[in-house]
Amino acid sequence: MLRILIYMVGGLLAAFILAFVWVSLRSTKSQGDRGSGSPIFFCLLLVWGGPFFYVELLTKAKGQLMKSAVSEAFYSVEPNATMVYFKVLSCHDNAATALAVGKSQDEYGFADRPLVLVRLGRSSSGWEATEVRVAVSDRHGVSEMVMPPYR
Image 1 (cartoon, helix red, strand yellow):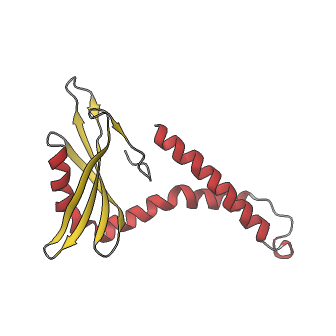
Image 2 (cartoon, rainbow, N blue to C red; image 1 turned 60 degrees about the vertical axis):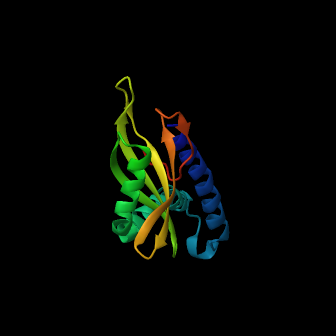
């Protein structure tokens, strides 16, 4: 919850700064005395939704090639969990970062949603995990900041 709150407040500040620059640089002859509502709304949409849109596009474009490597890496650190989905956070020529979201229970029966960060490298046989770590998990007592905040 704290991660989402930090994301929203940080995005709000960035959107207001972008909107201020946009409104400051526009011509008053063409815009007249119009308010700043539209630029603020557009900047909020861009700042809050842009990272999610980018991650969805990357996952759609490159995800199928990485699915088995991410799944194998997820189950290597969370053998008793179920991987619900994964997202490709970044992808370059021979390196990529993916985020796998799982579902499991702790020893008392409470639900846990572990997030596993997987760094991938491309080899001749396809994508392979080079680094795997649990980023967020109540059971493991780990709580890193992952942007954009998936859960």
